[in-house]
Length: 105
Image 1 (cartoon, rainbow, N blue to C red):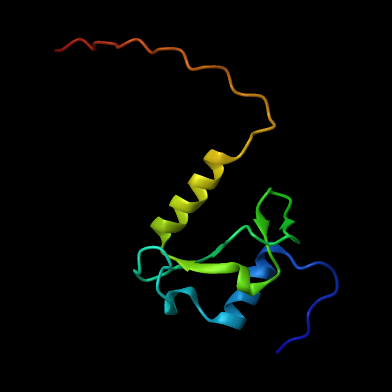
Image 2 (spheres, rainbow, N blue to C red; image 1 turned 90 degrees about the vertical axis):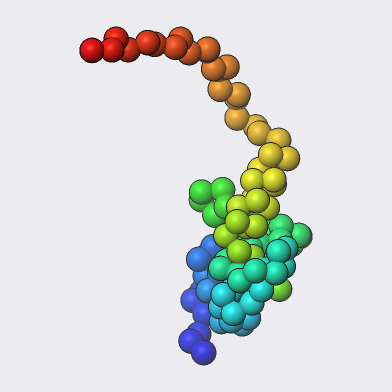
């Protein structure tokens, strides 16, 4: 095992740690549908949660991740985003578009 670099663990480092401790996600079944997992998905239940510069939340604890297939991982992330309260101002409402009939030749 290589020694850990000094300083806080990064998002990428946390995911590497999960892989080293628990193996590849693809060697596990998806916790939601039972299909082949592809990603380690953060459970968002760590009281010591960290956030990177892009706003991605993560945990340095490998036990706070679950194996998920791509579809279920997206579903979980989108559901979480839909429940999040946005602090940024809302964008202007979309205006209805006019239907354009192109001339036929």
